[in-house]
Amino acid sequence: MATVVIKDAGVWATGETLEDLSVYAMSEGAEGYDVDEVRLCTCAACGGQVFGLHGDLEEQAAKRICRGCGAAHFIADSGEYWDDDRFGIMVCECDGDGDEEDFNLAVGYSLYADRAGIRALAITSRCVACNRLGHWDDWMIRTGDLGLLDLA
Image (cartoon, rainbow, N blue to C red; front, side, top):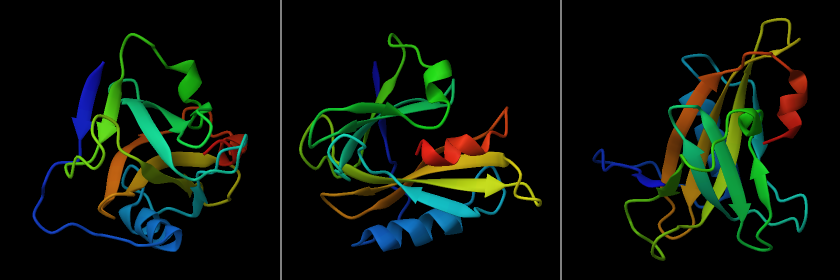
């Protein structure tokens, strides 16, 4: 298990609301493509919107852990590529509350022109402690499955 930190790149984008995170996700794109749909992550078990984020950048897989109830959820098709022995804990450079920070998360989806499938996705975040907006990872979707829109 490794820790991945948003690196200081000078001036950071910040946002105070979930709407700011949606706008940021749209502006960042996914694998070089425009984002057509954004889904804010919400826990299906308790409705919470604050999460820890674990990821495997090499395998392009991510799992969010609800801070309200502890429920874990793989983002999109990440469960197919997940390895419990190989993941990083995503943290913000502000080191908000220690080892694992709290984030609001959004997934931006790039759709094919006919909107019949997903081309790529990107995971973005807002640190609850400092409001920094971050772009964690993006990847192409192998299957194009539109059902992944509901698995943010």
